[in-house]
Length: 191
Length: 196
Image 1 (cartoon, one colour):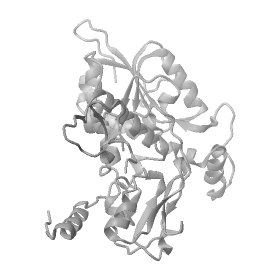
Image 2 (image 1 turned 45 degrees about the vertical axis):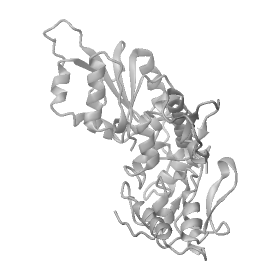
Image 3 (image 1 turned 90 degrees about the vertical axis):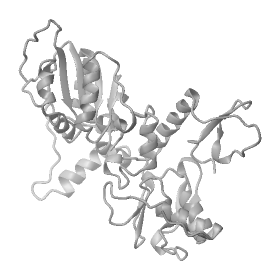
Image 4 (image 1 turned 60 degrees about the vertical axis):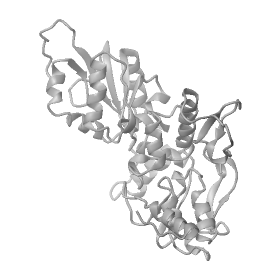
């Protein structure tokens, strides 16, 4: 989204979205906001997102929607950076809130990071069975997949797999109005 | 039963919270069913239930028709504050008609009670204690090898989560007709055949 200077003097809210261990379904649901996205461009400046070509997470971000569970060392590093540089963090969708499907590997106990790679890249490989390993490029899996709030302080939670667009809108509208966002009833439904 | 502690109530004159399901009504009793204190404990209990086993709503047969899920959002549970335990539990798919996924079981023991007291088969039981407690069939054997199971499906009808399910159902498909259990009990006890 292009930055448009608003007619009034109210500064645009600096919005970021991040994508960790998840299927991108939450971001697809964000795209389902349809025409509200156009309203949003008048109120926010999107400064970082997987749908933008920005490499480095910027400073002074007002709001960040985080999709996905914390699965590998890159996730962990970026999450700490996001927390340092962001006022309000929202756990966006079930993977961020509960660790959800990515955390099913936790049931295999300690050492699951090796056994899942073994299963996927050796036992199931049709050609060239080998474990992916490229230090500095392919991040190592963490021993245990975690929901975002297990690692850093999270300000608000937006459950759903994915959260439907109207639920995302409900939260964003409240944040933009400057009120403490409050979702109730089936707006908090997991799954 | 007093198993799940979600029906805790405040009774005037008694400092501790009591489960409504095991507390006898008496003359002049003053009962609070919804207070700040009760909501706080109810939410805590729900979070502990979610943290104890592997409840992954997104891939559950009961998604959208689950009593645990509905209670969670009705009580404002937007996340679980306790660390998830991620235990390893098996799925018993040996029965020709039904499956049992221990990952989703909250040990309410409804299936045990319906099997013993309504069907009268006595197939289902609780084995073990604490975090190791689990529902078993007959003498702790695969459900499909049970001699006593009549395949009536009452346990499946009574299950509040996706722990017991009809084979072949996938995400969100497991809807239960609890009215059938009520119909059977009313017919038997009151000789009234009332169908909804």
